[in-house]
Length: 417
Image (cartoon, rainbow, N blue to C red; front, side):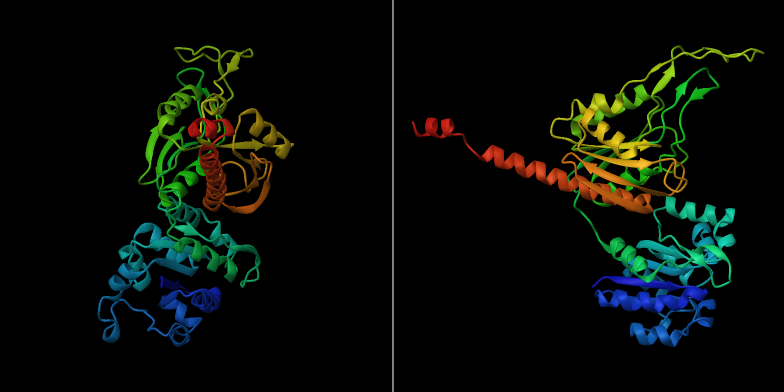
């Protein structure tokens, strides 16, 4: 039975933690509760003790039944640390390594996966300090269950309300899954923008942050794959356990992927490759003049088209970042580039385009099947993409076995002779 440590912090949404606990128990999950002192002002420790049938851990320095340095014993035993609700205070402690209570100390001592469900006032949620802390935690692999929007307990309207219980429970169950369905796969992922230099100072590029590609790399790694991440310039931290090949231009990206293509079983081309580059590179900075400047551009290499032409039995995943005629454009690209799967997404959306943590789109595979994916985190989107890719790969491998094992009438006659 998996063990979830449920952290409860001081927020009006703390009462929902009781529902989260019961729903996890219904799914045969053992739940131990760790509360902050402020949380006990909203829901009593006795309530959680009655529901969990375990003592509730509150004070890291309390003696008696908790004298076995419980933050260490729970930290080592937990499969998941779920904090719901997670206040701005505990998010700040986690992000900055502050351990001054039972919950923050347990976080530092734990190697379990961590999932936070933030809940706070809308202005607190979008404060630069909270945003920076959440981004830092995401980069360390901490999962975030995005808060909902609506009327908050304080009477304000906006984003910050604790996510719904089913969403929190679903995210927790997904985090508990020790998926190894990509073990044995060699995955090459491209990410980020490419940069085409004009002179030593200026360049042509695009707004890609690389988040979708990095999420794909992390998800494949967590599911057991060996991952090579070929990335253009980004500000993102390289995921642990992933081989990183930094590149700058479209040609460098093509060369890097080509060099690793022979070992790959799946290739996911999430990079936003610049379509054009300056016809010539100025050796010195181009001086500013009073008149207009003319810049002649030529096409960069067709990275995905060139690689997909050598795909063999490899599975190729592409992306169509469009602002209009999204589905039709993605279908044309899927066919023209001989791809197996493509994600069509409207990058004109403020919540699903470049430089945001969320994404939405439509998966289209080589059979023509479409699957609309509503707004979700890019990490969740990555898992949905890998789920479909593995389905397609399994079908291809089974068809290959069937074809290989079926002899023609002529072959059977030759064998009898």
